[in-house]
Image (cartoon, rainbow, N blue to C red; front, side, top):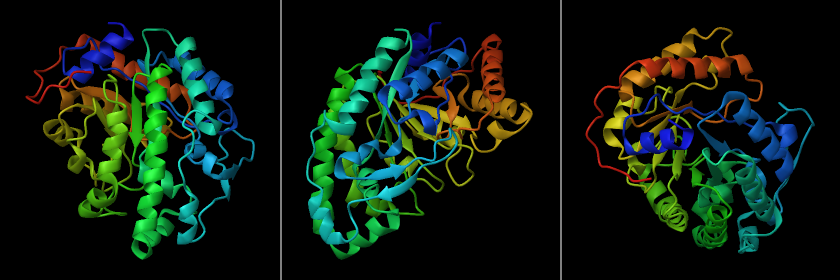
Length: 345
């Protein structure tokens, strides 16, 4: 199967010759321009022949047009540090007004999307990373807990700021698809986890806005919901209209792949521990995780991937090991797929 054909079949729960596989992560010295970001992304895809690509831009691109700035140390593994942010107290949330969705940092990312589509083979699908509105607003304060306090002390001002963010990114998401992406990778970052919010709080503050961004991406074949962190709310978001759900299935506080596949309507993306097995000096634990993913899925509805961005120090040899382990499953017939609601990517 060709990569796009393999991914589409996995999303639909149809037989595949082997599970599709892809990995992504930050390269901090190559994410500050569209050209550098795309070059690093294409090099990784060509080196490992990934079946799809997640464009993995700097996280603060979402908020640079509201004045957020980070300082880079210059090395590929040197995580940037927050230097300037616009919201120091709740009253400054009034400064968060809608921004043009096709100019500034957002315009630069649209350029990256167009450039990536031109440079990737047509048979390789890709998605652009977009944070949920609550996660975007949280990037305008030093810590997520700061926004949580503003939500308690000045909820109406927070909601007004969230509306401005949502309107901006509704327009941006539509333009991402027009620029050539096959979907969005909608990430909840710190928020859809019981360590940050209850189910009821997430419904009250985030759900409707998340769904508005997904509505803006309606019709795209490869929308993904990434539910970050441990103790996540993955199963509470099972009705989100996406083709795949991405999360850290190797964290024991999260649903297992078996549980997720039984309860989610779409495909599941993940199953490889990017901070643990991927960082070991030998491939045995990686091979075991690929085997568990294959057995849990029966060879269907599973896209082998990290639970979140892999560290920039990840050895290429370990990525090669993942690829070999996935390809080894090509010789084994998949089990019957579990019954589920069909999704059409």
